[in-house]
Image (cartoon, rainbow, N blue to C red; front, side, top):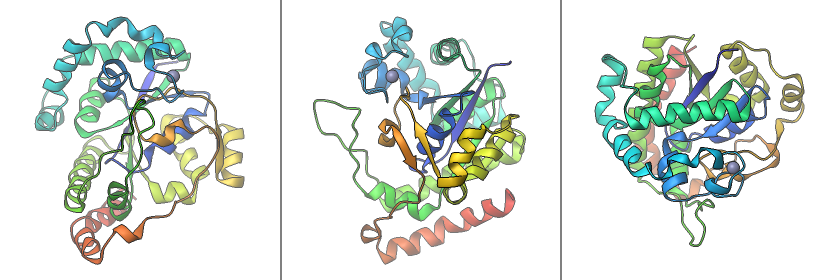
Length: 301
Ligand SMILES: [Zn+2]
């Protein structure tokens, strides 16, 4: 069995964490979380793994803490290459240099995770444009492109959410203005659309959050088909009968606070806090982001 890393690509707040949690319950997959933040948040800042322990004490990650002393130089290397401004290079020019300390160490961390988890498919839900373009090019890995309606993404940016992975003080997830989050949604999804058009359906799988919520079993089966597998019968029947699945302890790095949830997880659309979303926000989102959303729907059909 060939080891593979599958990347989740999306704009922030698109609901991909629950999708990764679901895939991690399939015994052939292991969800890593957002590896883009492995060196900054987990190693340097000592933030919690989704198992509730800091990385150095976590049963899964502690064996890979050998490069703590080099963490500063790895982050310096990341700051030089994992940047939106270099996207043109990763799209049009040669693949990134695998000898860069950041790339090299992430690749060796994948190898560690393959060995430790004993599965041959890792899911990296870093999502971010430059990271996904950078790493998906190195081994021509597959990408799942997760798309959520812009209105719901924008609302999610307006509502304060606690970050439980930071202990000792109360910290909230970043908030962002309607204009910035709308434009970020457009920019990010436009570039992933280009990636889809260049690489094709065999390499990039678009998944709409709304479709996932309406028919999680169907989307799960489509994903498995994209990866060349048959669905896990138990997981599929739980999704089809109750739109829910059971989450055991996992070890995801960074990402949305829902990754700390265990037990039975019910997939539902959730309530949007419409109170924070004013009529003029709605006009802005409809004018600037909705056309692209519907265009993506048509093109990727
Ligand atoms: Zn852990």
